[in-house]
Image (cartoon, rainbow, N blue to C red):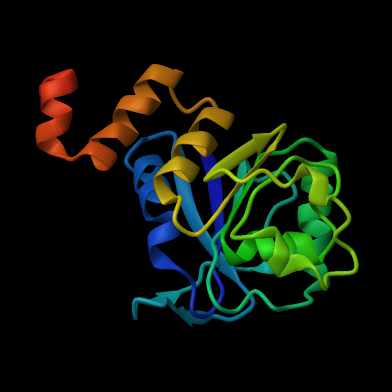
Length: 196
């Protein structure tokens, strides 16, 4: 069974990983775990979460690492930085959205990748961010083994991460995400009954 680890800090943005985690978790092929720097965290929406793993317990060869945004990414955690850096070097799948992308920029971990985020000007004072020319003003950007997205792109983020890990073929992924994006009735008119 493959494993996806979602790093969630206190005041994490619960909506940013909800589509991705639920789609992975509804298969027999994937297991979802949470990781953080604390044993318990609360989301922006008030969900209290008991964490499965501390950062040091994340396996070096975990199949997918997802960094969920929120209000607490102004951290300087050496374990997390080393884990992300090693995954990038080893071409292992990683996704980051919203505030987590800010963390990657501040840590100098976006310097070899095309990427997006909430806004490049937010990183003007990050001394280790040296790749403004490769900031792309799109909802989501995938470059090699890294998917980045802004905080309003939960569905686009889900789609690109699923494509990156070859979850299903691209058309099946697009349809699965389209059901959420379009809503049942527009989806039905375009594709037919999703439950048939």
